[in-house]
Length: 87
Image (cartoon, rainbow, N blue to C red; front, side):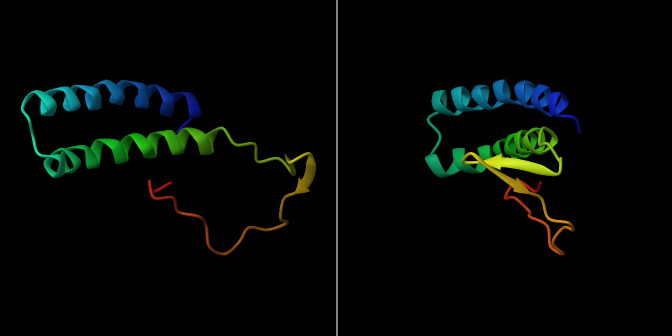
């Protein structure tokens, strides 16, 4: 998914989460119940934002960190990073 597409989807999902917060506050739900309700939508939002971040990364041969030019590895590690959002 392209960076812009992921950000657009995330922007559409956030108001739904805000509405859920408003509804559960009005209904005086217990905190643990609200956490359970919010787990899936906030995880999905995090996944979309991490997808956007990864899509925007520059896979070029070098990168700069703390004013030092670093070369990328010639080959990737056998294991890849898996974020808590599944990206």
